[in-house]
Length: 363
Image 1 (cartoon, rainbow, N blue to C red):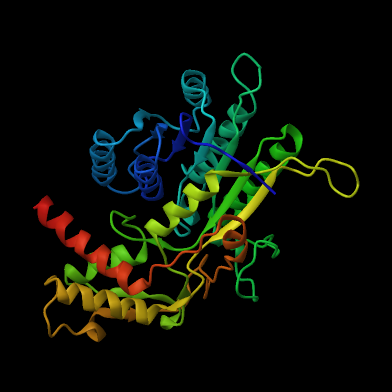
Image 2 (image 1 turned 45 degrees about the vertical axis):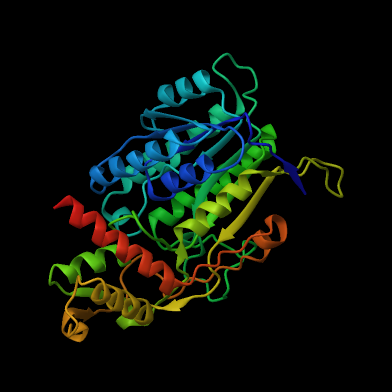
């Protein structure tokens, strides 16, 4: 059961607002009907080029200039408890969407401390502020939505991945921190009756995305004349999900919180839910790379006679990776009437056109 959350005339806090999903969600909210007071926070770290994050914030400001809704940005880190508390005290958000986190499976292998600080302690600070104000009174948060990841499924043999599947065998520290977020959120929902919804995102891609993601780094490498590294000898499949679909999915979930009710045993059921947000169609990596190559040629970034075979290196599976991701989005469609629709070929075209324009303007 869902409780309808009205966003009009409410304050919404988005953490990670300068991130890929964060800024896309803010822009979706700015185009929504009514007036929403949107507060964004981000630490603008240098995990990848901060100039891209500044660019996203400029796009948000441009959207805000013509929107009926309000936009406010605060720079800070969610691992800083005093900063989080001050934001909650100043703005008293009714809805919180926690997208701030240290991403990346491979990076977590060599930089584990960063993940513990941001993904675990940072999320703990958000949960604490969602349950009470600095004076100890209830916070009034009507719905907390947080980002989990398809990485929690690990190397599970069953596909498609369902939210009821076991996820207790992570293959990377990043996945472990995201699973810990789900467990922490469940505990807070049970103990303090905070309505909480977790979202497991599947291979999000698109314009202004993350440079560390394969589609982005592959485009960059090929344009610069380098060779791309393709793991598992190209036998991976990914459930590529276009960014606009992800933003729309989060927007809809924000408006429907888990309802308070009792179970068959007469005890309160935790106000907690989990959903996958994915296309639901795993694509072979070679087909995705082929679409990327075609668009790079079409836009003039690669020559018409470009030889991809001589610019790729096939390698075995790397630590922390999985051969396939595949989302079951039936619950999302059932409860929110939404399923991601953008075909990967259309999404790749939009990304490459943005990539061309962004780096041409940068020169």
